[in-house]
Length: 459
Image (cartoon, rainbow, N blue to C red):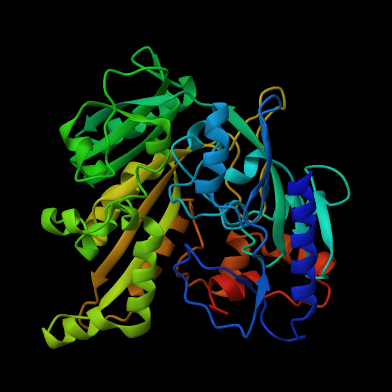
């Protein structure tokens, strides 16, 4: 009862802070962390979400949780694991919030079974552009808001509470690291596992992978287990992604598995020296986490220290290439070969995905602002880094080439990072007509920043 009372008070404070924002001024959340890589214009004030970062309650019998919109997955997992439960999809980074994963998308190794995080949301309360809080469900008076909210990036409102489904998890996750020297063979394995949810006679509960080169790629197959011979620890001196090349079999506690990528921000911690043996011993473990690295990146974006050093050394300027793209499985090997030749960034993350097909409810539903095809297998390909800007080229050229290649492959790209689409292309790819209809109903004065303006114009 106290949690519900406190939640109601926090929502009331949020509404008051929204009402205090002058008409015509950009609306932003006042939050300490962000996993965005899109530059944004500054807002004079932010909405007060200080009381919306907790878990309202976990129902271990119904296997659901009521969670506030600014609650991080780190905090949610801490509340569900003692019950032997976890969200159906837990995005890779600890400080991703529930509201952020739904309005901005998320993915992880259970996505080949459970789709994307928003697909396990049974209802959510949304503060709309009209200043009202409405409860949206798959059916009922606000069904169109429920369907359009995923990938709306806050342009249709902000989630204050979400009710999500949970799934059982065991104490450990046993891992098989399968090496492939041929990408077509890898995609064929993904297809078989996605269809049967088994490999070599064993159940597969989680699946992702890494491509180090077209001739060296790994699928990591996870199975929930009550006991394992020994569990590894990659929060200290050892580095998780390197283990894929070294160990055909491995195991982690369920907790450590969920955050296996966070300690080194996949492999991006190398850019800060955190993988150097000497630096790693000196770098406190509590600071080896994605939100710390992200703060360093924001400081670099603000002060451009590395760019000035590169110029002093006579090095070319660099273009940031930070993207996650969904490619249909049938074309994933071809796209990866193209990417290795044209862009050349390695490693890249591979995460199979299929929209969720709930038992007894027929086929998967579609989501208009991120229209993946129900019944089709995809591979999320994540690449995060920078490339030198060639003579005669401009900053953004490589990202534009990637966008075209993704569209030609029948895929989609996530919008947490830079996007370069013209408005017509953006509307075609991201449900522009549906978005405008829903905005006109729930934000008739258009107080919230538009989706194109957020994602492309960087407003």
